[in-house]
Image (cartoon, rainbow, N blue to C red):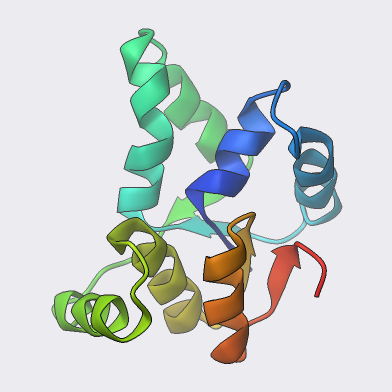
Amino acid sequence: MITLDASLVIAHLEPSEQHHLAVSTFLRDHAHEPFLMHSLTVTEVLVGAVATGRGQELLDDLRAIGVQVADRDDGEPLRLATLRSTTGLKLPDCCALHTALQSGSMLGTLDLRLASVARARHLRVGPLPG
């Protein structure tokens, strides 16, 4: 299982994005694994598509490549607040990190700071080296 953050998904969707090819290759190479996203991460990815009238289409596309929205529980707000307080990451990044931590999955991100925090918590991170 791989938890996807918004930077990775947006790079995949934007052919002009600097990391598009690497991200698309990473997703293709891991297509046999389930993809997981926090609901806030999905929302973040959908904003641009909604603005152009393509929100539902993009949501359907995410489902078609196997993206599942992570389950949430009553303890999530406190865990997210703790991550936000202890890491200094922005809340959307905390949501992706939390999802990976809760699921024990690899974190797919292009964000160097998020990747560093995830590695410090013993998570595998891709597609960035290191």
